[in-house]
Image (cartoon, rainbow, N blue to C red; front, top):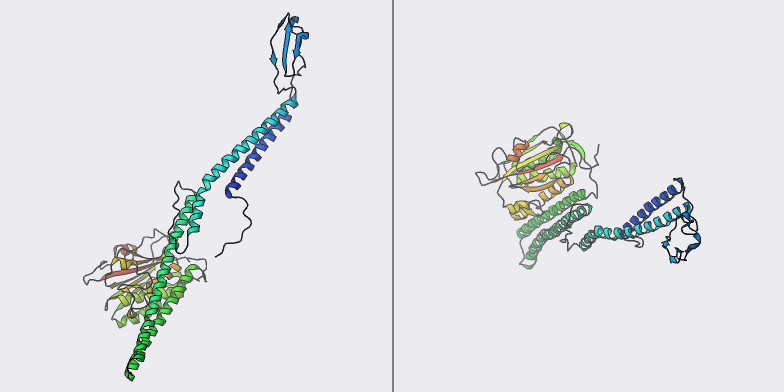
Length: 465
């Protein structure tokens, strides 16, 4: 992205602040000086005595006026009987009448105004420099941010104000960008590896046919079956990547999603039917309980989320076990005491995972036993579910021993995250664990619960009728 073309650089913010303060001081001082002079000219009733050019005759004729004289510097002296008397200095500023008073007031107040403007401008320049100095640090940090270097932070110190808030916001943005770029780089590396593996497998099988002795028809058929299997996996991988991109595009708002109000049971019907068919192949059962209520969702994306979560529960659950599902309004209070969110719990029993793997289950190409393998799917199921949840305003996190998908509406209740789901379906039960006890059971299995919280109001303005 290129910078927008701007006009010629004229004045810095510091210079503009200084100039603004100087103009305000000059304007305010000018108003005061003008008002004061107008008041002094037209307000008082002046009655000043007229000053004589020469002093009056001394009292009782003690000092005849003929003995007084004035020098050019304004010094008056007198002589009497052979000696020189006192000398009196007349001030350089002589107030003789009203015009002298007003003139003196005008030029003295003008000098004071000029001095105040100069001193105010200097003070404004210094203070503006101190206030705006953190912007240089913020600007330097923003300029140094590149895809290969996003680890620099402003870390502005000092009392909280607008600039420290801006610094903290920029640091948070840089941290999110750093995580996003790292995730993108990791995703690209993993995707390249996952897509390269089936191609390398196909090449190896073709090389075996072409470089070895003449194969029999049965060998040709076996290789063809294997190639078809590998090719199907490559197609599935490509479709999963497209689905992940579709969900992420919904997050970014490049193509705004439409959210329609549907009954929760209608949204769940088709994904549940498909998952029950797959569960029957493993002698598993899905027990679903849905309380009547409507939710604003994007049907296509929500269907994909349910397919992935139920598919993972069946695929990774113990054969012959039961998957529990409950979808009901949560306890978060909205306006008028009504619930503001819809909560979906999906619980299954599976082999225990180490904490590090659990923390990374939502990442692309990560599964319980490490890297994805051909027989276990694309490794993008929870990544797609996470992206769909984020498109609805939610997140997927791993809390405690269970993976938890949480979506809390803005302004909803406390938003306490459930650590495990339950058959009873209450938030209290969800936090304390299922009725059979959370965590490791007698078979050495772990009870996993994914919790989805959806707001009962649309997370975006686009709500289809």
